[in-house]
Image 1: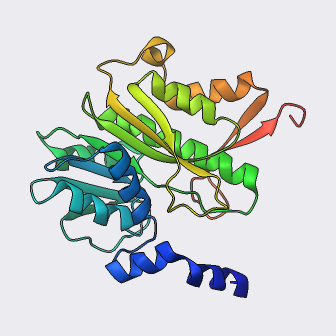
Image 2: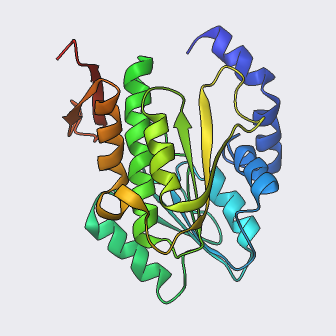
Image 3: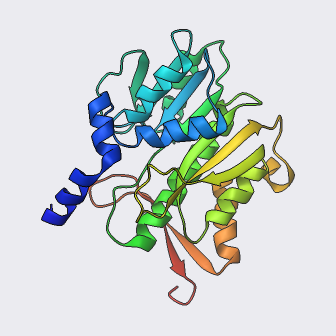
Amino acid sequence: MSKRWRQEKNRDSWGRQARSKGYRARSAYKLKQIQERFGILRLGDAVLDIGCHPGGWTQVLVEEVGEDGLVIGVDLLATSAVEGAKILIGDITERGTIERIAEIVGKRSLNAVVSDISPRLTGRYDTDQAISLELSTTALDTAMTLLSPGGSFVTKVFQGAGIEGLVNSAKQRFSSVGRFSPTASRSASSETYLICQNKLPKPLGSAAGSTALEQVRDHLASIGIVVESDAEDEEGTKVGFRKLDKREG
């Protein structure tokens, strides 16, 4: 950990504010700004937080939906309990995890799915962006499985190749899709948030017979990028896919 990094963290007003208010991460203010701008959450809503560790977004969700709401957080990493939320350890690509979530939701309608999920950064931008793209796309497919018509979906994405494929896929599933960059994001970050509102009763066009992940992979191929599936990294952690220029293949 470099001295410069520590100095920048200490100067981070959002981080200081988060700590002073008891939030586990500065990212809590990103969700607060998304909520202020788009109003995706209402009192009494049932919400799923994908990639919830360390719990900053989950804390905000509990505040926004109130005592009559339901907040479920899921992550591969163990996350300390958040009062008012149900926390699961699980992989959203596995049927068992989806079934556990559906069991908790029960007869309620899931009104929103949010995800601030990030890859374990390698420092290689193309690799990190590719992994992030698949994580975000997988979160979209999960939302389509669980989210009620009219519901909202929010996910973090990093600018780069393939993002338009994800945006177009979302537009076939929601009536309103846009991008938003909270001021709480670091100024040097390439992250943005995809804000999807009013899930359609049925997907439109090619989305009717395809997953979002399939559509994004087709989009990457159409712009000259080959996708190589990487099921696991050296430590056994799922890392998504790697994008290669066709000239490399």
